[in-house]
Amino acid sequence: MDMVMKMFKNSFWGILKKGDWNNENTDEVFEPIINFLVNHKDQYIFDFHDLMSEFLYELDRKEIYEHSINQEQFNEEDFLNQRAYVLTNGNKYYHDIISLIKPLDGELKCPQLLTLPAKAWSIKNNKSIEKYPHTPKYNIQTKSNTKYW
Image (tube, rainbow, N blue to C red; front, side, top):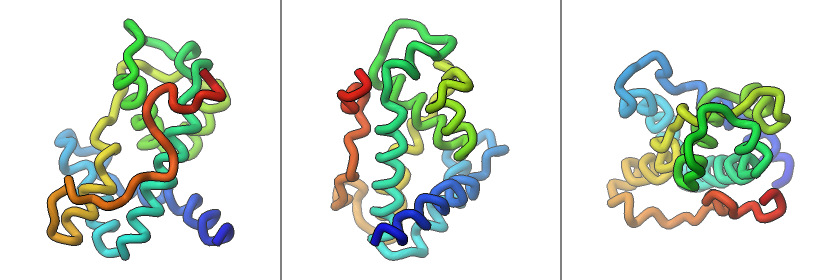
């Protein structure tokens, strides 16, 4: 199982690259990713969601927030959406942020990423997004990573 997750971790970034990042319509940006996930088993979508939650959790650090630029007043929801934006920019950017090589930009947010797994599952199973049966492995809410706050 560990080897499978490790391989999937590497493919997580490739899945995000499938987004139409040059499209100005945010709904259409994620369409290729959703279409990709819809063509996989539910467990694959849940694994993707678990990995996304792990990466968001790892970015949930006071030092990352304090090292960021263009931050107004601290807002937990904004910080979550800023962390989501980091993931949409790939593995290297993620590692640059987590290593404090680059500052997180408080003006750049991507809340749409947070509902992506549930949306893909909903389409695949022709059920309401509210019926999404999976709870991700990690709590993604800001300050849930108590070790770093």
